[in-house]
Image (cartoon, rainbow over all chains, first blue to last red):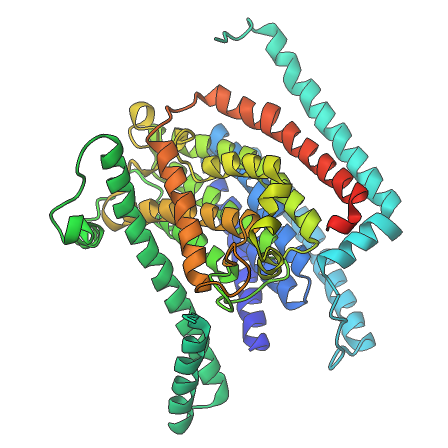
Length: 176
Length: 353
């Protein structure tokens, strides 16, 4: 059963990822990315990381992808505006970078498979639970966690400053 | 007692015996079990929703001094089934300029996402498909897919009213999700768990209902949940007088019906979450084992569905800017205040937990 679930989820993720790249319309790519993220959440569930799976769906598929969809729809992006300013040498450069990445990933994967026999190894029942993730975040990794939140706060403040400037130029909005 | 769990177990062991007698392997029986659970869950929720559609029409009729549906069955009780059959037979009109795959999949995404929530809902004693350890988060996660469905519908229809409706719904649902999740956090802090089954069993009499300890949390949740369901006074995505019918403008026949039913499923979901987290779920208010648990659950949930209907036929619609301002400037600070107070309360009265 686990085997079937893994291959279905992995296959869906792979197919959607390929579809994401080959689609000419940006909106279809965004929707494919939603499918990829959902399939990845299923894989997290299989690795008994339930909390991470839920967060993956809430944050990525729910919030960030909705934002992407929103931007694509508001700017009304279509294929004619997309990829018209492509430089000639770009494709061969992309193939080079992509090829290097594939080789690197396969090397890492091989090292992992040969070094850690995971057959029959069972994780603790607590593994991946909200309590454990919380203890790690607010205990061992408190400093990086707080630094990340400060980084996000700075980004929010920056976005507010950028968005706020334009309003000053316009006449104040009427409110009743 | 009229508990359903025993009856279901008896039926299931009968089916297992029957299948095993036919020489069907264990894994196939397991698959049949999963399929049966899915079909039964879908059937139960679908019947409830068909009832809700009829009920909404009756409630609105009562409030406007009309009779409502009267012709089909006793007081029109099977009117919805007649309507559903009519919608299934209707011609499916698809406009020429639509983005076909997106237009086609939008109702499917909305409909499936609406039903997926019920995997982890405790309907009664032992009546829960899977008591996930991240139950509350799961419900929040799945409901976000509704937004994607609505945005897809808005974009795929290639119609400015649909697109505006899609935008409004996305902005609204994403905004109200933040106070909604934060309001639920108060209950999670007190109960120390995310599993819906455990949260219900902790509230085993009237005094232990979490609403007494989280009145502000419940208020924020209930307002935000009304907005999440796109119900009046927050029904801007499909405001008839401004946007024709919003994101459903270009849908006809059964596709329209799927959006319509998904809206009622979401309404039921909001009530289910309210009852489960704040009002003791299937636990009776007079201590455990007082009356059949599933009847308590349905009774409480139906009351909250009625409150949503009451809202709809009582209040006028908000304006877009008021809507967003209310979410970010009123509900969100209140939700933070609620978390702060809850933390303080737990710190001061630790024994109360």
